[in-house]
Image 1 (cartoon, rainbow, N blue to C red):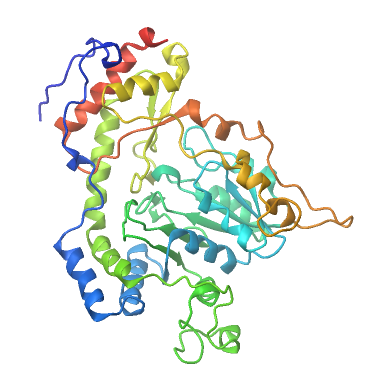
Image 2: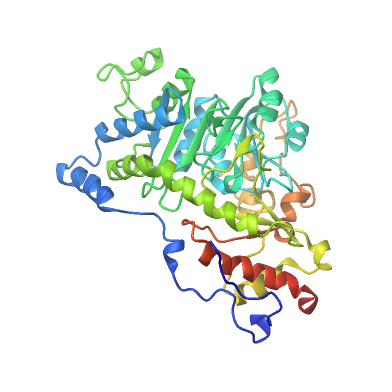
Length: 439
């Protein structure tokens, strides 16, 4: 297809020129895609009055497990609950430590605090924006029980590197796949490689179910433990689902005193969405790769995606980002670069999630009235009675703290429409061409 796009030497919109992005067609970004099929599935549950049942949920779990190539899947009310369940199911308990990237959504790590464990924040790699194995290795202690590997913004993290660190030490690896549904690492779906995977399936995610989460694993005991933790009436003598002695002993009562059951309206939508996921995800991948292919060789920007022909494949592309190289544009600050992009109609912002290791709520909040920050109170005390201060200091995780200088948001294209996508390509090329004016 031949497309006609504006010339890069046109005046910047920031300086009074015409915007590069002139289309008002928002169908390029509309999400989730809800059809009559979704409506029928949800209405069937609604009219049956079975919103709090498990029959539709069990069908979804079976279908999702098969899609993942795993024996077990357990739906949750949200992704945060799935992550908390994963932590408890792999043995995270009072005084334990969970290593997590600082630059992620808070639900990747903070559920550990509700288990009376604590979080140790690690740095990320500047090219992948995923957890850095070298940073993790430096933070391992005798209290480390789990490593949370986040496939950030759809990019498959190097799971094998973390398994190599974890396995000899008896540490469990939890994959957070909330950004990367359907992504591949060495031919395996993300979430199927570590000990357990957990992910959100809320309405904005690549696999949208309105609100929900799901845990997946090949380990029956982890699956059973997750049920025992927060799934009332999914275990015990009456349903005879599980063989765990402890589940029989406690009469079906959830040991976590939480109710993680998903609403079946969401399960019904999830089943429909899963049936269309591979096709829709393929179009997203085609559109996003087209966008970055058109920008190859453009100074100052790099695609946040694995190298072509490698062993990793982006999944979902949720929360897509680009990498910024200020030195190639004469040191132009990323904030100014994004300001010029926004004027062109390209919705860009510097950074991504804020680094959690410097967040006051993480470092200062005394959630349970211990007389000290919870992140410290939950750490194991030494022989002198003092708790280990696991908090990372400002300046200690340099890549995470530089996120506002090295990464920026890009549009999340849901449709492969080259004529429209080219307008966004042109906007970026135009700003790069006029970088001298912006400094």
